[in-house]
Length: 381
Image (cartoon, helix red, strand yellow):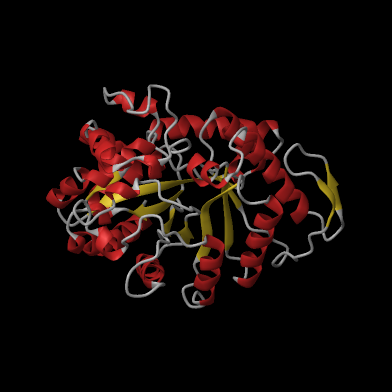
């Protein structure tokens, strides 16, 4: 046993019938599967074009008719925390970004959740994506520099002990700034950094409690990047082994391979491959529709893509690309894939079930049982 743990990501999108329907279901699945944590994303709009989020293409649209109706995660996690006394799940945001939230407010939200949940809060943190910043008037230049300063600001406020903080910064200067929310039994929420590029990996090595990437890469690439993070931690005189190697995985699962193949071939799954960087597309012999240097999810503006364009893009996506973008298969298949990631250093997998992309809503809903089987199966990793 290697101490492999799992978390479960809720989509936090407003459903029909009851506002908390998916939140309750995800919590129940996490408990049934023996997961360690429950997570919510931080988005104002979807990373899938809303133009193709229709019942004609996906059964999930019958339950969640708007792809963009995301809940505010810290508020929703407060609701989850109030119903978490028996489940005792750790609660995280995967991930909040440094652009549209002042880091003092992020520090306040995370410290509040950690305190009120009795030490179960996790701050997932990253530079964010263009789609959650630029359309709302937030400057999208220098996202990595802004992120690093935001992270340093949060640490400075958490470590201040209520003493006014003055700190020079290009993005977030502090002038006698007071932060006095106490820690929970001497602890602050661990910070899980969503790092991908070289500079972000070095920042993770210097400051992160966990590494939490979420975009397409191979297990071998994961291992190579983990080595970079650990080298950066060593250079910063930190114990590299104290940084938890985690990852976010989007999964397509069902009871049968035929149902999984239908998910892989669905329009939303193929359009979802737009979130993979151009170099990932190139590995599969195709050029990214948005250019050979396109960075993927970080710069995608999905709400600007109309239905005809989205369908044209979907036609260019080979099944192999979808299968690299997602973990796909029956529970046995996905557990085997996670074992490969474990062998390349991963010790914590947060799973986001996107099986609702299947054209039939009943198949997407039925994926709950395979999902629980996956969570239970990881206990053997």
